[in-house]
Amino acid sequence: MDRTRRQILRDGAGLAAALATGGAGALSAAGRAAAAPADPTYALGFRSLTDEVRIPDLPVDGHLPRWLRGVLLRNGPALFEIGEQRLNHWFDGLAMLHGFAFGGGRVNYANRFLRSSAYDAWRRDGTMQYSEFGTDPCRAIFNGVASLPVISPVPNANVSIEHLAGRFQAHTEIPVPVRFDARTLRTLGVDREVPTARMGTAHPHHDPRTGERFSYEIDLVGAGVHVFSERRGRRRELAFIKQERAGYLHSFGLTDRYVAVFTQPWQFDLAGFLKPDRPPIAGNFHWDGSQPSLVHLVDRRRGGVAHTVELDPFFVFHHINAFDHGDRVVLDVCAHRDAGIVDALYLDRLRARARDVPQATPRRIVVHPDRGRVELRDLADGAMELPRTDYASVNGRPYRYAYGNGLRDRARGGFPDAIVKLDVRREELRSWHERGAYPGEPIFVRRPGSRREDDGVLLSVVLEARRRTSSLLVLDARDLSEIARAAVPHHIPFGFHGLHARRPGR
Image (cartoon, rainbow, N blue to C red; front, side):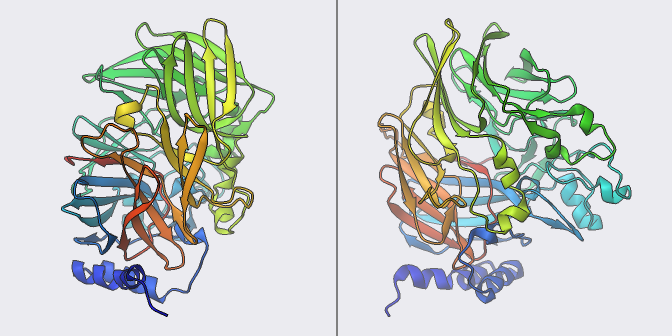
């Protein structure tokens, strides 16, 4: 059987890239990938990657657009074992940054662990010394008796990346970002101390028209959400949303008039958390389906909660977009039935190749503030998570397109194995998929000078399970046709979020 150009390039990618670097780390990674047995499942995406490599020229199948420049930065967990101890949850792995730099139709790749306090303890002592979302080392340290969580001074910021005023920061749900150099991926440190008993958002918002940055912090002890705006280094608390019990949030929406905060009844049990036999942080949140979800509209200019509306309970990790529409406020979200998705992401369940990973549906929430009324409808029939838009152009405004991860066959279930494009106007999803391929979050990059909202490319890191390696996939955002693919000589563990920067600086 004749072998296609793509097959030849992919089979030789590991050796070619390793020789290009001249580095033993890359060569060993390529060798392991070649020698490993075939495994058509996604479980490889939850195996540790320990090598740090720098590859100056990845082999490319197809042609990268000449206009595509800058760097794609990705963040996510890469190490799931520390010494004899295993981390429990996908959200707990030690953070690794990945960079794909473009220019002249070529692309290079580098990765580097974020130098968090947890990373330093692993390299120095080979031990787990800090608490994570679903893992608590304190029982081992204190002979099975739990103490309060030991939080990293430099957090294990493995969720997302923010680019603001030329600075790049990695985020997790501890509200202390970790700065890094986008060119070298070198960790630069933190600018504030870890706040006591607070969680934050890994998805702050920016409004380039006003120069404002928006965020929130969840007060686990004081039971409520602090909403902040920041401009020119000065931070102002816009509102405190008091709760009977603190509830979990991951993201929020922003419109011209409001900060839109969606709260849900996955609530923190403070009394249980203070008991000697308490579970890790995640185990102290409990779903109460008898309670409603709420949308709180915080006035951006005057401050304070201007409106609150109730709706039947469901669970949201990610907001797609939000905007004002006359006297109404529109919030588009990825809606899960309940918080069961969090339990489904424990590593033992994911590695068992379970087919019961809950999926989210793109859902529109329309709030009529003056009437205290809310309308709900699903935007399409299909699954969608890790949503992205052309943020710089459409965030906080009416829009048509969003992109994310979904399923090629929702009836069969399983781990997301498709890139989906949501057309809000037509209320439909279309998808890209390939057998044995598991793409990550798709990042939209607009073609310079274009006017169409979807005129650009999507960049996604794809685990190609049959080859046991990963690649950078480039799709035409208009029709999801493949433009190019750049092979990496090792697998890249499943990550969460990233961004494209045209001018990477520090």
